[in-house]
Image 1 (cartoon, rainbow, N blue to C red):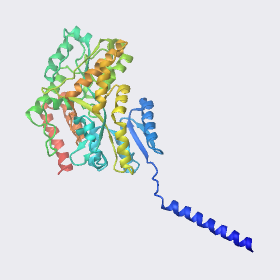
Image 2: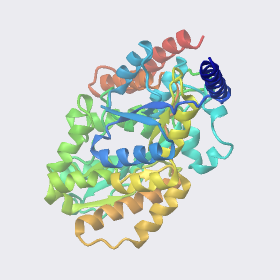
Image 3: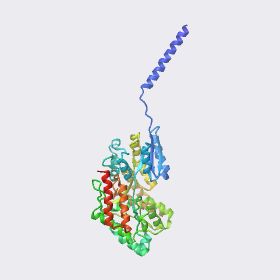
Image 4: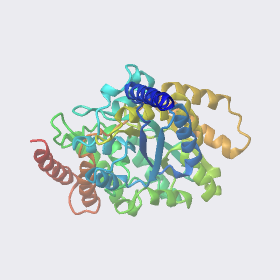
Length: 434
């Protein structure tokens, strides 16, 4: 009996100890598991080693965190909208400013303002930081990488035409295009009016002084300045100074013509030189980089990629923190070197500029790319996002391009094209913004 009493005491004491342990665990603060983040990027699969390296760095800094990366093609808009409707949107998605603005207008993107550190804006180029801000939705995007369009010029074609340099202002383009066409049989330039392709022509209008939209989102281009811009492109085409395909084909056709030696000037970035060197070595040897075409104020265009956080994200703070990590100075400087683009981070841009000055290329190809990148960095000083990232800007481009096509093909006058484009846009705008 004595032994049984001792065993009973030990058992009770054991229960007390176990209970105390359980109570202790119950009183401990719960450890929140690290968030799993879904990241979508646009057409960056070829930079897989870099992306995986940055993701691994993030995961090492955040124990237990997992970032699942998916790279998608350029037509991300439909896929993302489908994901939003299905409530399977990623936590961080790589978008350009126009689509970001369009998605934000539908409530699809989060205002990042309350989630950002106080000094966030000071880390990036002011012009590109502003491009991620929507007047109604707030700060909807964090800038990532960018490109500046240059004039890549086939100097052999210019030499045949008796020209030393390409034009620097749009007003000088007609005389240049005529001289190239008459003396060489090639075309001077290719600027598409295919509605689903490049916005270069729309950007040229802004450089010519055209106001695309007024403060009420109504057509601002039905003015004497707007009519001159429409006439500029209509006349170039009707006079045979633009390739016939500009009304039906996009930038890919411009690249084909340039690489075949049938185009004197290609509007593209330094990052594209590598492709020309590979696909058309002879043309690449004759290629020189020049500043881009601009208007009277000298403003160049910058093409920007951003990171956004869809409103559905359950890990919004972690998503913003990861976006800031991906776009910090060190990571942007590395990516700029890999992709031959430019960073939006001020500190990273300084690093890139210093590296370019110190670089000693060992081949003509490397020297050519270095010169183009240095020119891009210099051009960035006077570059901005020319076409406002407002909801419906893709519709605006489609309307303007379609009416310009009609004018170029002689179906209507250029003035009629302006008036019809304004009428169609205003009808759309009144329905969307009464």
